[in-house]
Length: 423
Ligand SMILES: Cc1cc2nc3c(=O)[nH]c(=O)nc-3n(C[C@H](O)[C@H](O)[C@H](O)COP(=O)(O)OP(=O)(O)OC[C@H]3O[C@@H](n4cnc5c(N)ncnc54)[C@H](O)[C@@H]3O)c2cc1C
Image 1 (cartoon, protein in one colour):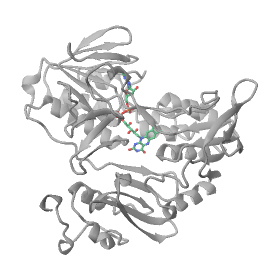
Image 2 (cartoon, rainbow, N blue to C red; image 1 turned 60 degrees about the horizontal axis):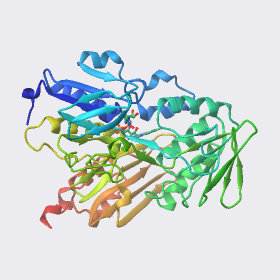
Image 3 (cartoon, protein in one colour; image 1 turned 45 degrees about the horizontal axis):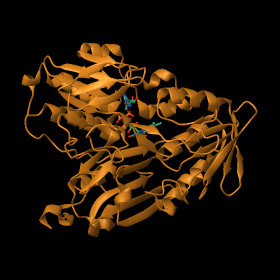
Image 4 (cartoon, rainbow, N blue to C red; image 1 turned 90 degrees about the horizontal axis):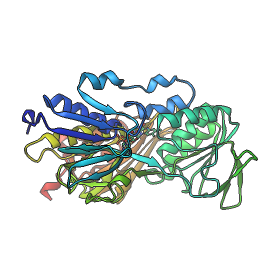
């Protein structure tokens, strides 16, 4: 594949998160005189979204999240347009239209618009003090409000919810952590693994409450949140609330186009939409995973970066390019022990797990005999070899005891897995 002859063409990227920025970096590296434009709804260049929780905790300054400044784009000849929201795309005309009515022509378009946190559709769900968490501006608001709060409620039992819980703990907020399921991260954790996390939350002054649904919020006379009310009639004092109940992909600007949307921008394994010259990358995609023969969503920094690079390379390629094959992983470092989730644990049709000590535990998910994902607590040394097995698509379920060995560092030749392709 490649590319230098592509110079002179016009590449437009929507979104300057890690997916969009990574795409632009590859395009700048691989072309000589192409026009590369990034349109970003945010007011600042790429920053480290996964570090904004540390800023919100109140311990680190805002500049800890900085990645690129304007000069980074200038040096690469990338035209970065901040505060520029895309309103629609005319795919027949190959033109992007911004909210200000500007029309920008493209030869190749990469959509990298990520997602937006869902709000709770309940009375006072958007009252002052009820927050969601995605941008550095959100982090600044959360930092300030949590630092002034004495009591709090966190809503949503997933990976962003636990970040919120850690922020509340770091800011000495006496918080209840309201989880709809019977445990934290129920789509990946068993009761035994989740119990380790629940204990660690309690040690930090955050009390988990299970199988509970928020009915609404009470406010004070100024309209600020004062309490969280659940459907079972309980009331939790909360002058700070964090809502982390999932995200909606940012696809509204594509609704009147032929691009297929179904829980995100639907792309094939090469990140192509069904529409000529339109690609997508990062959290906004529902991408086809060839290993598991299904469409999946992202949600990790590393996958978004890899997809951005790949979308750019494939947009430049003369042939069909490469498929996306990265096995994602996500690490939680709020406690004295690390937690890592890898692959797609919720895809499993069979699970095995083992507890090694008070705070060391592992659970693995298999589907059709393949290792599709898992969660590790305490010792992350086996993460790399386990991810490699997931990447291989080999059927290894019958090797579960070896995979659960405390010091697992890969399968030996005798334990050689059966490749899927030979079945
Ligand atoms: C608090 C927090 C903690 C996280 N922690 C981790 C972690 O520990 N590990 C991990 O792997 N992942 C973590 N993540 C997830 C990770 O940050 C995301 O997976 C990653 O940032 C997705 O990158 P992206 O480029 O696809 O989308 P985004 O980062 O969401 O960027 C998309 C950009 O597109 C812009 N945009 C949207 N619509 C338009 C439009 N119409 N016109 C122009 N621009 C538009 C948005 O404003 C945004 O700037 C965390 C996320 C958050 C919020």
